Image 1 (spheres, rainbow, N blue to C red):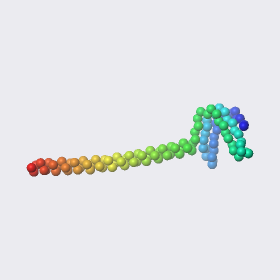
Image 2: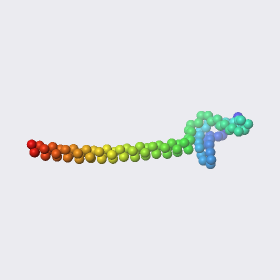
Image 3: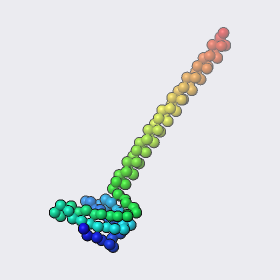
Image 4: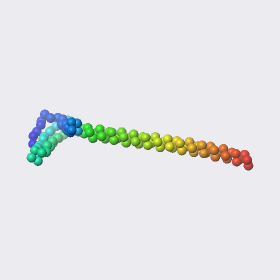
Length: 105
């Protein structure tokens, strides 16, 4: 196992894109295993871990979800408003008819 005493930040780059950043590392060690086919990094006492791709995906999904919910709520509000207006029209017609009937009797 190799120690890297000066390293305070570790970045994981996948397909030319930053996948994760680990800040304020106190101890960083690396080890090659499986006949050199596996690289393991051991990071201890890190203060902040940011997985940038997942964070972006999560924010995108949250925006989509919130947008979808707000659109649904707006549509439901519009439907309810239309129903309320129709109900008010029917009630007004019924009240008018009752007045006519009362006058006739």
